[in-house]
Image (tube, rainbow, N blue to C red; front, side, top):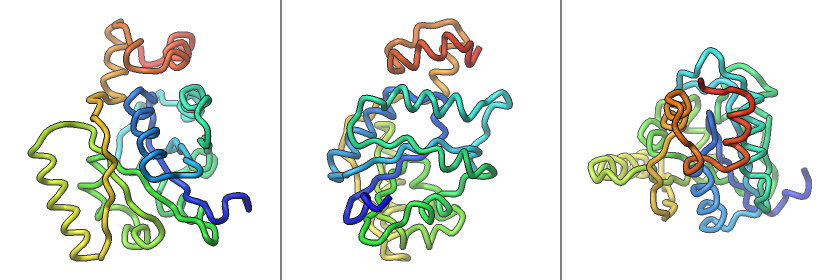
Length: 205
């Protein structure tokens, strides 16, 4: 990992159940706007703040990330949280990826920004990385809540969240799973290789 010294490394974690076009759009904008040398895509083994389906297979989610992001330069698909097992805490992942002279940038979605101060060792996380957020929706009321929360973090902890500017793609993994279950076409929601993988493995039916 010595090659990662003196570099800007992004971290994009999540359940990715499944990975979809909104994730890809956010990842590209994150890389470009934060001028990242590398971006780690890290599927969670067991997300602390989310319920996942009992039939979920983390290795399927990992494989779908590999299929979705495989052609993008500078992207590293990491199985560190899956290999670690148990609840996937961001603090532990950052500890694993910390290197001298490396700046870590953590990408957060709207829901993560609003609940960041409930996370395990969140104050330590603030010291370990630069938090960055991307909007997943256009709702102005949620926008006001985000601004208020970010102001609170700055006043209490001296932390400034940076914003990724990209047109939100109002799409969630829940939407994709529901569409699959209902037998609808998901070709506009996920990359072609991911759609094929979901179909071949009979996922989300």
